[in-house]
Length: 472
Image (tube, rainbow, N blue to C red; front, side):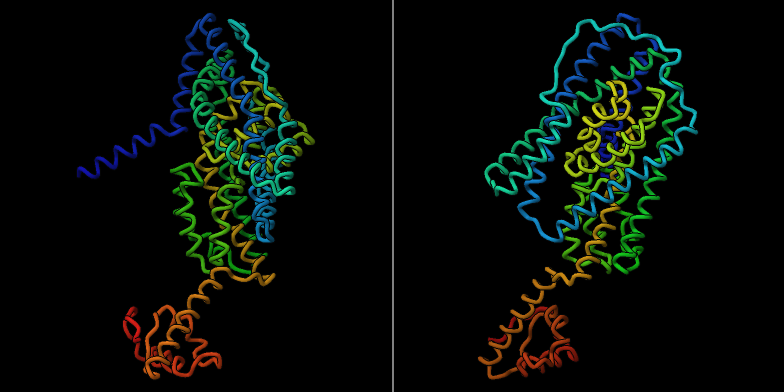
């Protein structure tokens, strides 16, 4: 009973301290303040929110350079055919999910009851004092710099500079964890207080519940298509992989982290008979960091909804196409924190889509409230991409690294047993049951000493215990 109570208390504490719960409290607090506060209080709140917004925007170029540049440099150090296929598959999956969301947005959002943001608004009081904190460079300049630094480090084989980029990545991640995320709830409070003061947001809250439901359906649609493509390419049944991913999906919903779900995902993928073990060991950890199809699908649809609500129109088709293409690149280098995808792409949201502080805050909040389901979609989709890697490796006869290691181990045991047999006058000897199971099919091979082959045959008919000391 005492253990049950402690477990329940731990679960409750984890739920209360989770980012979605904190943001829900921030949204409620902002709506409450905006509904009852006077104009003077709203002016102070708006000033605080503006300062926090500028701090977040200032960090955006640092996040872009800090995560994309070292990611390219590190991947270049271990470049291979399989790695190239993995990167291409992850990007195409992410881009496909974004395009699916864009098409659904243009087809569904105009039919939703969304009020334009320019109707019946109260003007928010002016700021108490303006504070300008400009970013060190525009977003597009940061992206270009990150690409050039990463590629130059690979081409020049600059190992010291690559190590410097990795260290800078750690510094930027610390900024995100210790500055950006902690101030985010306060920024949300200030933003929603201003939106409540204007008087239009409260009527749109039920709409976001409908939008979240639409996005969840989109997740399952994309996963179905992705596994279908993976099965067709690998010429295997994708259900053999997907049916094992239930526990990984639920774990991702609970932890809201691909990294925290990695152990469960490896176990689930390892149970699939159609996946090669070397592809599981290589692909699952890699895709956990670069494959964010669910998060990207969600962000694209939410950005279009927010644009319709706050600005009265959807972004243009060329703008959305460019947004989807660049978002796939940003997602590969996104930080591994809750909401990392949308944080890494804040520059696109503000620079390309033209969102102001209110639009950015709304996207961040609604995205975070469903981030666990986006993470679950990401993790489950990793199994499909690993199936594609397995199909590629089999089609191109790429050697199985795990099998090669196993063969070396088994051949070593057989060689040792053969040497011991010669020293012991050809007496029947034991090797491990694992070696017997693997080596039995080759027991009669001409390359195998006869005494060993006969010993293996006898051991299969009259098995000894799994582990016994060898005769010397």
